Image 1: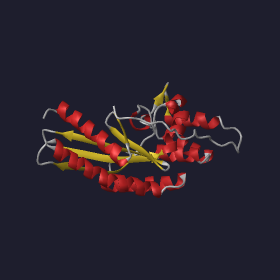
Image 2: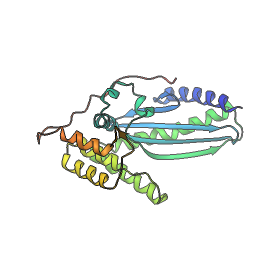
Image 3: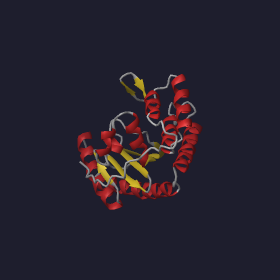
Image 4: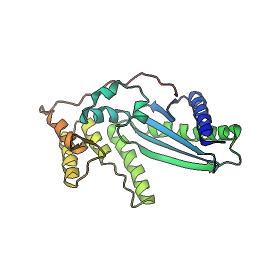
Length: 232
């Protein structure tokens, strides 16, 4: 089977199983909002090697809203739900599990069975993770735990969670600590993976913080989107 044919088959199967398990699918991204969390599943196939790989990641649903305010892209809040999974400029997600399998044959029935197994494993995991999060602080604790696991496995990993720590403090309206994080990252030359008109994410965050002059003024988060997506 050619790679293009395999990709079409994989897309078809992901659409079918997304519907069956209550997820959504767009442009190869499988995603859903569960409680206050947003999950994304990626599944890729290499027919030559008969290898199927997958991963699941999550972020707090509200991270994107405040991230877009900081980077001066508030119009992104009007995008469909799928944009939070596959948009060009979105808040980072943390991988919580990944895996791969070599199949005996690269045929629809066998691939379908493996994708079903993936959903049967990852769907309950998403529910378990989402159920452990009820505040911005508890979300950060879960993030910290997964990050510690990542560093334990890959000590030289370049992945950090400073952006998530910053977004958490902003969502909590803890502007003092948010600015301390931004200032420290700026001093380290960290751009936070984003640059707008020569300004890093952390410099933009400081500009955003400056707009909140009243001590008791709280950051407002846009109500949850009810938009639906179909896999395209």
